[in-house]
Length: 127
Image (cartoon, rainbow, N blue to C red; front, side, top):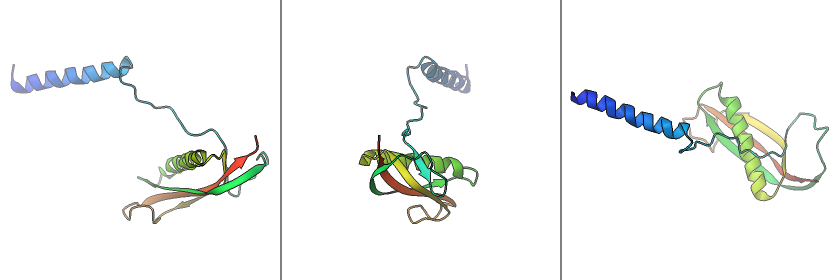
């Protein structure tokens, strides 16, 4: 056997071992969505079903960078998920007046061509 053949065989068995661990759930990659279940009301959209607000906590915001123009919608969903997480950490159970901005933002790198900035107000709704 030549040296390159040995390298190929070793590489095959390493990749086979890793794929077997993933297949048999020895190594688990968590792909579940852990975003909060409480509502986020977008600014300007009718909110007929919105419960009574007991307390307004404070403004929550998140900025993220998308790698392309098409990815901005996905990054926006992620940013709204981050607003929900921050709201949950403050003891709130909803976000209202969610607004989105696109483009340059001070929290993002100057190299970010497709920035997404989301902000809203964390609130406590009645149960």
